Image 1 (spheres, helix red, strand yellow):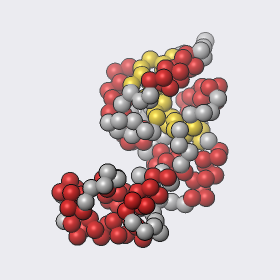
Image 2 (cartoon, rainbow, N blue to C red):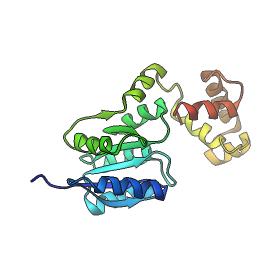
Image 3 (cartoon, rainbow, N blue to C red):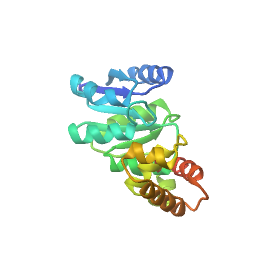
Length: 204
């Protein structure tokens, strides 16, 4: 008899998390041994329970699923990583793969497909939602640098250049230049449109 696959489930919405755990729990060879609601709780839980596969939602407080995946990939390289998302944004797929994810699926996929993805990644396969894969290829690479992404994320709350400069320990001129470059790259008119466009494409 094959051993049970130990799974960590990270999802901030309790109803979704509990539903996924219940569905996976119906599988004879899969056991959800840990559930967390924050991205910054993932690493400690994975270490404590020696899990085989981590299922990570992208949008979580504390740390995104992609950031958590990168941390897990560095600290626990043998752990298999499955990213789950409500948002089929092609930029997320590219970021997830760069972070070391082994699979990328949308949450409305059938439960049987998720369970099969868990088994496949443990066997060394990579599983990617085909629609998202096609969209990622069509969408091209993220044109923004790490610093441009950092500044756009910080600007999302409407902070002024002066506030951004203080927060990011940069000069106002540097902040203005990065924002201007990002706006040009995204072919939009202002920073609000830049933030919105980058988010829609999954580039933040």
